[in-house]
Image 1 (cartoon, rainbow, N blue to C red):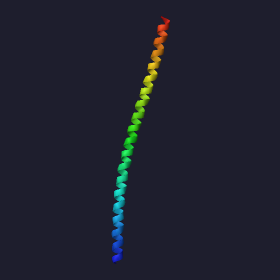
Image 2 (image 1 turned 45 degrees about the vertical axis):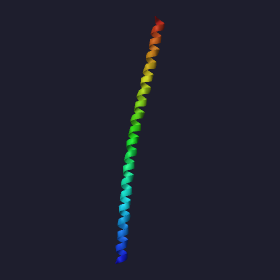
Image 3 (image 1 turned 120 degrees about the vertical axis):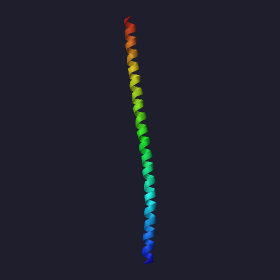
Image 4 (image 1 turned 90 degrees about the vertical axis):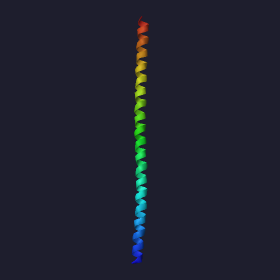
Length: 70
């Protein structure tokens, strides 16, 4: 009977430790998801900046063409 009790206590202890580790892993995964989301937002901002640069180049080309026509 005592061996059964010790086995159950040991199993309960290990189960509790595993739950703690799993909880910590979930917390870390959530942090990573948030970082990935921030990276995606930054990537989108860089894409916007690139598009603005392309628009500026187009305007410069138009201005040069207009200046040349005058």
